[in-house]
Image (cartoon, rainbow, N blue to C red; front, side, top):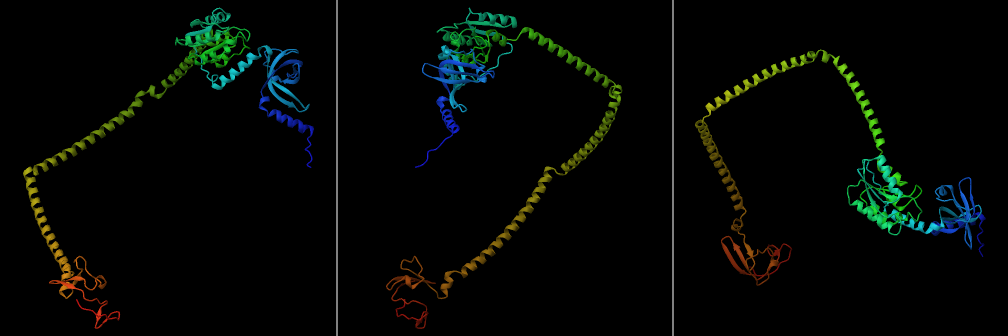
Length: 464
């Protein structure tokens, strides 16, 4: 029987830790419970226990995570904690490593916020960030006409950039009808086509009061806007879905107005600074050019300009003289060529050219006749030679010496072997002066020499 595997305590703990770390369900889990034994260590880490009526679990939230908490945890507070479950190997205890934590009262809203945020992020609605115009002429504001936000925005715009024209689109910013009202306001301002930048937002409030800016309809209307959008919802610590979709997030409505327009005082200071830089650059350039002018005025070119021109005048005279000589030579050559052509034309009248052509034609005609006669004579000689050779090779010449041609009974084929006929067949014999119709009475193979054939065998038979 095999002995059971024995694990050390460390090995057992590491095995359990690996199992917990490998479970995807425990890598991102929300836990609701009451805080007890809360300790905020001097290192910044928070150690506490989450408990309910039946059980409890140790939890830790490191300083890098808890610095973003919007509230201060205390014993007895019911919270909603998000994190991962793992094992602290030294104590062999599993615990919750918390990344986010909210008071339990807003837990459901926050879950809905997180789910919508992740879905819109996956669709790419958070990726587009358009630049804002530097000097907007018209600014649209989508907000409540009665809140403090619109007063802060208008005051800031008038103070910073009174040249801009503000178009206010009044909407509901709180309540069940607020999301549709905000979306309709954004769509309505986009139809003007003359607004350069758009501010969408409201003043501060609880998460429930700001929830209209976490609705999907508002997020998609901001993304569909052809006008760059600045989101200005609540205070600096408030974050909504609209902030992620907008081209720029402002911490407050006042800050949104400051981001939308430049300050006229700053522009004036920049203009003064640029004017000073321009004046300084012009003075520096003027001084440099004045020094350059003085240096040029002292140069030999300006003091004695004729010295610069005299060599070129001399060179011009030389070129003029060379041009005159070359032109004279060219005229002389052309005059001589013209005289030669006149002489040739005088000697080559049409009648004279016709007589020369006729004499040349007669000479060519005589040469052609002699060439044709010579060619014809040579061709006749060649033809006679070929006819002689053809006559020597003619079958009729051979037949005149006693030879004959034997054809089959149809006269279509020459017989070359005794195997081509049988006794009783009719054959035709062609002689030099006629044809014989014959019948085969006997057949003897081989060439006869006396009474024997070449192969030594004699056969009796009747001659043709």
